[in-house]
Each structure stands twice: as structure tokens, then as C-alpha cells.
Amino acid sequence: MLLIYTHQITSRFSYTMKHIFTKMLGIDVSFSTKVEDFIKHSGPKITYTKQPLQNEFFVRSNDLLFEQGINDLQINIADWEGVPCFFKTGERSNLPFDIFSASFYMLSRYEEYLPHVKDIHGRFPPSESIAYKHKFLRLPVVDIWTFKLLEKLKEKFPDLEYNLKAYNYCSVIDVTTSHCYAYRGFVRSFAGLMLDLGTFKLKRVARRIRVWFNPKLDPFNNFSWLIALHKKFKVKSMFFFQFAEYSTYDKNVSPNSNRFKYLIKSVADYSTVSLAASYSSFRDNELLKEEKMRLSSVINRPVTNSRMRYNRVDVPETYRNLVEAEFTNDYTMGYTHEIGFRAGTSYPFRLYDINLELQQPIRIHPFAFHDYAMVNYRKEEQIFGELDQLYNEVKKVNGRFISIFSNELLGGEQKVDWLKFYAKLIQKYHV
Image (cartoon, rainbow, N blue to C red; front, side):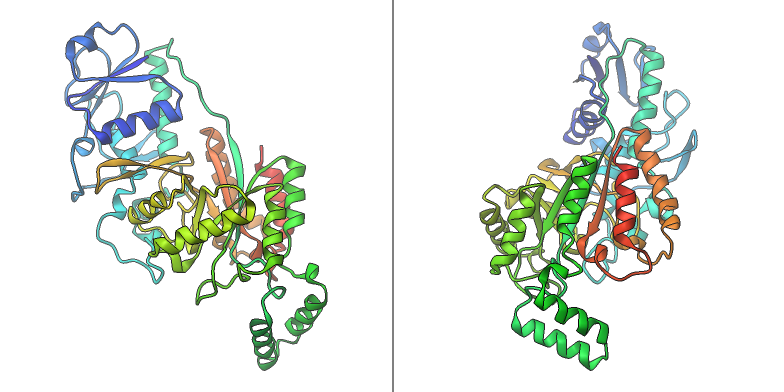
């Protein structure tokens, strides 16, 4: 049992300590504000306050975990044995920075509560983040800090008991457009044909007509191939289907289509099927609940996992809405056009709602990269050159490597053969 002494046990303090020690390192931990209990404890112990008590492991605390609300914090990036860090401590501290406050800052998405200019879809831009500005977006810094902390603790307490998780890979398939030409309905299909003819896209006209006679030839219909690949390499996969009515940004097959429902059911026999929430449901919680219920009725099982269209996350409102709609897991934490770790971690974590000063009952699964961050690359060697760095960092910290691919991009005509690339990626990163 690791005992941590502090001058005040707050919600932020408990949240951070339990995540780092219990969930990431598998260490039993308890807290105390009583000096006499701390002194009597014969096992490993940490002092987290302004001054050390004895010769224990001491981390000088910043004020962040003992405050409430949002304040204008001064962030100065320093270096800890080659890793960026912030919230510098003093010479007496066993660590040169307050790892707990820095981790809370990243995990809570503190900076997303601060004033910033959102993009056209209401998203927090990566360029506004300290990780992007200081070039450590591609490092799971919270995980790296935590493992370095473990090494320091083992030096101080050789008998420290811990239980680390194993590395694992998860492939997320975004299905916001299940078919390019098939099952689109007469009006949408005819309008698409007229548009292709009007813009002289004769190849699309030929493909469109061919698919009308044989829907299996639809270029986006790669589900059987994906399922077979995942099965071959024993990869955990999740398919997020959009199940919404047509709108400006939501253009999937109609949820009333029986053939679309049959596709979803067939995929659910082999993989986890979850909800890709529509663009329209972003601020309409009743619509979100309706989409969830309708998808659940198709697969005849609860739908508890979500992804937001275009990775739209407005912290903390989006997660409050998901909690109200009874989702327990979300896979939207990341950037569409930048690879890396938005929350500084590859590990799943609970959302801490700063406005309410409490932990929300939803688990956030951060992804490492979205396929649309790589569409401008011309060669797969270039892409693997970028992704190998992420993979190696996650492997070193026994993290979870989550990729987001859309069946649409995998079936599209691009500079890169995405199906071939995806098969290589699965083989390379699944272990």
C-alpha cells in the first residue's frame, strides 16, 4: 500500500492520484492529511505538499489540484531527462516538476475551458494546444511521466508492488457513409447521376451504373474484407455506424433501409457495433438518444460506445450530453488532421468536469491518429515513418494504440492504396 500525505484531499487530487497509481500502474494507494498516520506508515509513501515531512519521496505541489474553477495559469515548458514538462518545483523535490498537476491539466483538458477561437465545426483547434505549440503532441507525455515516476519510486522503494497493463491495439472503423452508390434511394441516386454527367465524370457514371446492378461492387462496401482481416490477426475492432436522417453533413444511407439494417446486423455478428453520432445531434440530446435507441433496436443489444461526427467535442458539454444519453465510453478524443495525443495520453481515462468539480461516469478512449490526417501523403513509406514514432512511444508505456479509419477512405481512389496500407498497418501494429 502506497500512502500519500497532503494538506487537503480534493476531488481533483483524488481523481489524479487514482488514475496514475491505481488505473495506470496498478498500485494500491491511500491518502492522509494526518502527519502522525503518515509517520507511522512503514510502507512506501509520498508527501505531496509544500514541504517534506521526513526523508520520504517528496513532490512539491503546485496549487492546481487544490483550486476550483478555471484560472489563468502560467505554463513554462521545461525538460525532464529529454521529456517536456511544466509546473516546475524546487531543489528539494524528488521530481523537477509537479507531475500530478501537469497530468491533471492534460487529462481534464483544462486549456479547452480557456478562451479560444473554435473552427467552423465548433471544435478546439490543435494549434491552440500547448502540446502543438511546444511540439510534444506526438508524445503521450502523461504516460511517459508516469512510467518515469515508477522508476524513481522503485529506486526509493525496491519492494513496491505494482501491476502494469499490456500494450494493445484497437482498430476503429468510422462508417458515416456505408455505400458510395448503392442503397441511396431513387431521388439521391438520380441527382448523383445528373451531377456526374453535368461535370463529365464519366468514370463515376460507369461505376455508379455497374453498382446499381450489383451492389456488392460498391467501393465503400469493404466490410467483409475488414472483418476477415481483423479475424486473421485477432485484432479488436469496432465499427461506428451513423444511423441518422439525411442532412447537410449527414449523408449516410437512410436508417429506414432494410438492406442497411441487414449490413449492420451482419457486422455486429463479428465485431462491436457502436454509434457514430450525427452532426445534427451535436447539441440536440433528444436526437442523440433517438439515434442510439434506433441502432440498439437493430442489433438487439445496448449501444454504449459513441463517436461524434467530425470529432466534434466541446468540453465538458459534449460529455455531459453523452452521460445523459447513457453512453459509457467515447472514442472522439483526438484531432482529425493532426496525429498525436490530444489529452497527452494513450490510456483510457474518466472525464473530470472542472465546472462541476467532479468525475463524470464516462470513459474516454483517446485515439492516436485519424486517417484523414494522412490523405496528403503520396507514399505509404512516408506515413509509416510518422506512425512508427507513435507506435513506439505507446509500446514503451504499455499503452493503447487506437487508429481511426473510415470505410469511405479505404474504398476511395487516392494516391495511396489505402486497403493495402491498412492491411500492412494491422499486421505491423497489432502486437
